Amino acid sequence: MAELVADPADRDAWLAARREGITATDITVIMGLVSWDSPWALWHRKKGLIPEVAQSDRMRLGSWLEDQAAMEWLDGFDDDGGTGLERGGLYRSAERDWQLATPDRLVLSVTKPDGVLECKTSASRDGWGDDRGEQVPAHVRAQVLWQMD
Image (cartoon, rainbow, N blue to C red; front, side, top):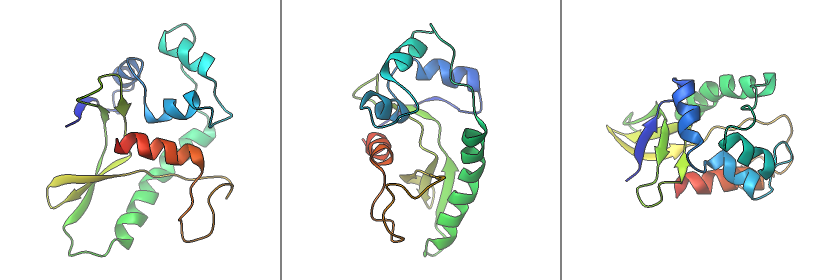
């Protein structure tokens, strides 16, 4: 079972806890799947030698759209009303204390967590495949697999 380490609402505590391990976002950098960050910069941020990445307009927009994406997913989920969503926090693996994840939402069946929902928006369709959603970019797949683990 994963342990809740920090609530993203407390940004300072959340950032400090993230520096203690590898998150789903970090794994995409370590694997070289993204062009907007580097393993060198990631290591230096973890050590507190360079500042955290300032939140850009695109990052803020993605966070803002996360709520809408989650509601759209829930509206399209056909069940008897027993499924709900709850904001995720920063969790640590019980087996590997360096493995961290911040799922966007916890999917609840009645009252217990039953899965996670990762909400993504993109400025382009690059790597997304057709409209059926069966293909996702490699960096998104890596993040989701990390969080599932």
